[in-house]
Image (cartoon, rainbow, N blue to C red; front, side, top):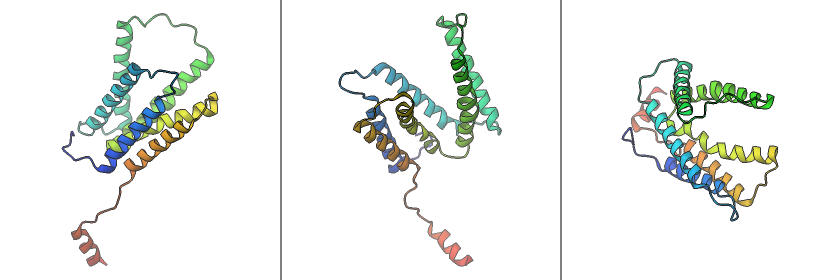
Length: 192
């Protein structure tokens, strides 16, 4: 939409299939209601994230991707700190347990410093559609971790949803049949 390009059928099919698979993962069972408000908030966050990913391809950014990622994280942290202060969430810190401190350290180092910097680096080299396809795999990884670490039950619906999500990523990342320009093929033959 921002580049006035038509979306390819593979990418559109992949996005719709992944969205449907993720919704299928969220719908738990008949006894529990779907938490609509949190799902809408997560959807809005995903749309905002996608908008930023696409927009980053059009902005003039520093050549250093770690600098870009660090600047974005500092600005995001400042906004979150201001929002926390405005909603009264900044209270004296309670005692932090060792496991909570280790979990926070892991999220800072692996989730922010390493993964987000790699994400920004990839955005500078690949299309936003291809880079963002990781977001569909996250729920499948969460289901696997829930099964192995928390003893959660995997149902047939979960398996079908996971298969839809993995299929969607395949559609997004696959290029389909390659079309070679006639002039290029003639030049290649002449070079031989």
